[in-house]
Amino acid sequence: MNFDKLESVLSDIGSIVWGPYMLIPLLLGTGLYLTIRLGGLQFLKLGAALRLGILKRKDVGAEGDISQFQALTTALAATVGTGNIVGVATAIGIGGPGALFWMWMTGLLGMVTKYSEAYLAVRFRGTDAAGEKSGGPQYYLERGIKGPLGKILGLMFAIFAVLACFGIGNMTQGNSIASNVESSWGVAPWVTGLVLTVLAMVVLVGGIKSIGAVTAGLVPVMIVFYVLGALYILLVNIGQLPEALGLIFSDAFTGTSAIGGFAGSAIIIAVQFGVARGLFSNESGLGSAPIAAAAAQTTHPVRQGLVSMTQTFIDTIIVVSFTGLVIITTGAWKEVDPETGEQISAALMTGEAFTHGLPGEWGHWIVTIGLVLFAFSTILGWSYYGERNMERLFGRRTVMPFRVVFSLVVFIGCTVELGVVWAFSDVMNGMMALPNLVGLLVLSGLIARETRHYLKHDPKLEATKEEIEAFMADRPGWEEWKSGDVVGSSHNYGRLKDRIRD
Image 1 (cartoon, helix red, strand yellow):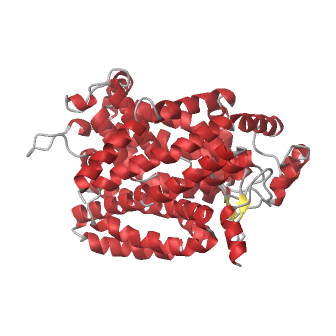
Image 2: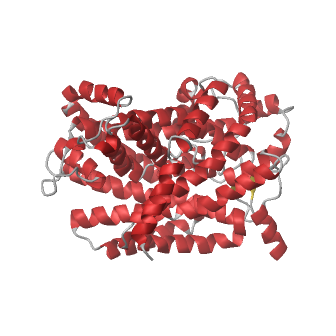
Image 3: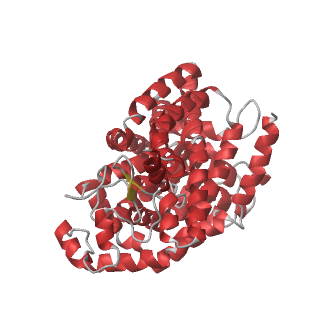
């Protein structure tokens, strides 16, 4: 097989999917439309959502498999990965500093998109054959949208999600870890692959409760560790900060390449790579994170939707911003390889920025350790997304074999070249997002109506379970949701197959 030709074909398809006539307007347009319909929810309720998700962390007496905080950290584990290090560098390296502006726009609008998809995931979740909560676009598209359209959209999402999880959530992450560990410490990729495979299998065989416990401990530490290093660099280079911010805002609407070439000369390049890498980083609209949200112990879908919304804020507005500003203020985005005279690769750009900004070997260590932790946590989160969609397609009995195969594929990702896989991941990400975004637009009326009702009675997200049940008593579908029976839903296809076999 000619992998170079396959990569070229996939790249051409990706350019169409992520071009100005498909996903870019659909992503930004959906976010803007939902922002208007929900009255700027992401700005008005961010503080209350952060308090609920990070400080309170759980709803007392709520149904679910993991706490709201663990659902948040599982989603963060899957999103805070190479996109926050290599993805940001790629966007700036090709699209110039203006690409960071479009990553911000994707994040700000994506917050309400993330709220909406998490709300739907909890609203239309069900209980599988093992007694675990299961939800996400693969279910809410079919259950929320009547007729063939919903069934087709849900099936499309499930198929593309299973394919995508081996790319964005597995091989690309393992390859990034192995490459950086080899470069930093001279460890052979097969050794790294073997260690990662064993660690992944140990965690993944325990399912969502095991994943949630690991990510709840790992994610906060790794984010704080990385952000503190970046904050030090920005304080040291604070004099360059105003100029960096000026470049970001001016280049967002003029388009400036990193080193003067044609690749970044047009505004569309800045927009395209800003939006594409923004979605790669925060996954808002992709439909992945609501799969973790569906497992959360929550007393109302609105509450978990708001907690999930903070994931995009943390990922893009905080972590991505720090990475981008460090790259720009240190000048790493303009660096060239002395041997080739070409711009340094995105894989090295963030590392160079941290190395220049921190004393001794600290920068090198922070980026390497940060990337290892970020990428490994992404593998854990995406395994759960993949297994939920395998269950949707083929039944609960395929979950454990999937976990084993997913763990073994990590080794492959660590030991082979992945040009084709990166191109494939971009296409699959886009194909996952398409049915999900269409579904969000179709179901926007339901989301807006139910959100307004809930927030009218509990604007500060402080109501008890009993108080919520009192003001929700007469709402359509409330009793069914509490009992776990989804109103107007088709049967869980995977669960039905398990029953037939049994």
